[in-house]
Amino acid sequence: FSVENTRNFSIIAHVDHGKSTLADRLLELTGAIDKTKNNKQVLDKLQVERERGITVKAQTASLFYNCEGKQYLLNLIDTPGHVDFSYEVSRSLSACQGVLLVVDANEGIQAQTVANFFLAFEAQLSVIPVINKIDLKNADPERVEKQIEKVFDIPRNECIKISAKLGTNVERVLQAVIERIPPPKVHRKNSLKALVFDSTFDQYRGVIANVALFDGMVSKGDKIVSAHTKKTYEVNEVGVLNPNEQPTHKLYAGQVGYLIAGMKDVTEAQIGDTLYLHKQPVEPLPGFKSAKPMVFAGMYPIDQSEYNNLKSAVEKLTINDSSVTVHRDSSLALGAGWRLGFLGLLHMEVFNQRLEQEYNASVILTTPTVPYKAVLSSAKLIKARRAVQKNMMYIDQNRVMLKYLFPLNEIVVDFYDSLKSLSSGYASFDYEDAGYQTAELVKMDILLNGNIVEELVTIVHKDKAHSVGKVICERLKDSLPRQLFEIAIQAAIGSKIIARETVKAYRKNVLAKCYGGDITRKMKLLKRQAEGKKKLRKIGNIEVPKDAFIKVLRTQ
Ligand code: GDP
Ligand code: MG
Picture 1: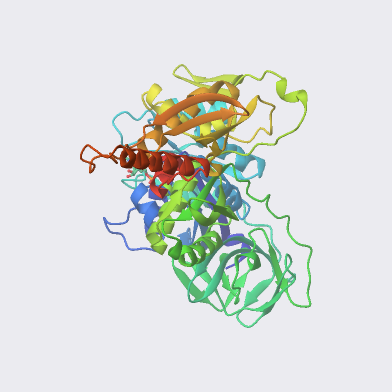
Picture 2: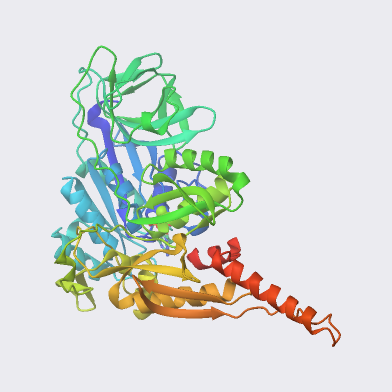
């Protein structure tokens, strides 16, 4: 295929607006998959994607399309739409020259429509607006056209109105891809310059790198070098994704495909890396900003004997999802484990679910926290409000776009759910990092009879310490079994106790077996029991079942 007849594009949209369904139709139209009623989100290959009906991992497919007697190669990259996965979106975009911006004809522009549009706009890509679901009874494509013109400054006559479900007008989308998106700017005569924009791990074949070729060509047997590690590899296989892997003799500049070269480790296939031919070094392509974790949680095997299995599962999964950060950690109650960083809550849940489904691992996840920077100065004394309005724009009479500055920890847990229920499902939400802000935060300890429980130490906003502390104490009270002595459960900031619950002693009736009479024997028994209590209390030997920790630490 000549470069002039090649197009690399992506589909971006708010979640559920129909990206994957549109991708199905494009695959059918171009003969990549057979036309049957059963093609539902074909590119969503992961089980978690099929169950949740969302795309988690961007997928690539090379399509062949005949238009006015000319054969075209169209490389389609399906992207996830959820906020947590915008990192995947921007990675995919770096291999593209244009995007299809899909907007639901009923819902109109939503938060991630805006966020995704700006990712494409900043990357200077051609944007083709596609209004989907025109078959719906409540569809109002004219209103959505106006919104698109107002918010994105795209003339309304550029919108293509389709039904991805029924296939209406989908052919026009392919024509627009050819007409409106430029071919990639590449040079086949130069030496190889390939961008690694994604990588997956296969148990038998090692790392499979998804590559976009900017210059030159690559074939089986070539010796290639990673600009990042400077390691040399021999290429075992190259090919296109159709959407399944299909080996080819060569990959040429302008093509998007995959490459297997005996890389065994995630660090060897860095996303954003440039590959070049041995002895023909090139200037590496600008890489990506590395993903920045926003939500952190502890992860432990339910049973310590499972540690090694879980370790290998976590390692393999992070090869497929390099946006997760992993640090070893250990807890007195839960044993050896990790501290993991995720892009958001959904990302965390999806990671957990993939561990269970793809690697059969069962884990304990602790309540997520967000990163803080502690500065030991009086600046924390500055009174910061928890949310500050920044911007407001009317999209039309019915919809308004609001921008707020929020502390991240206020939105990681259940903010999205509350927003949805308050607005009866109408509001949508997206966020980007606004940097660190000063706030009045305190470190809250949880004490059991005066001993700090390390795994329950949290950082909370001063105003919320009391209510958060109370909830933790109550949960602990419900899950701690009674023991021979009383247990005081306290939440404390420094030496100040802010919440308290008590687990009453389980009073063993030591006298039950003494039938009257022997007073000295009675006294002895009572004394022994008192000593027993004292001894236990003194060494802080409270038997806290692991279950109790799990109940307190778990998200739900
Ligand atoms: P994605 O999250 O953007 O990938 O959206 P999906 O392709 O998974 O579609 C979300 C839902 O919208 C699914 O239930 C689809 O069947 C439905 N859907 C997609 N396109 C259309 C359409 O043109 N008309 C109607 N009525 N439903 C559609
Ligand atoms: Mg999808």
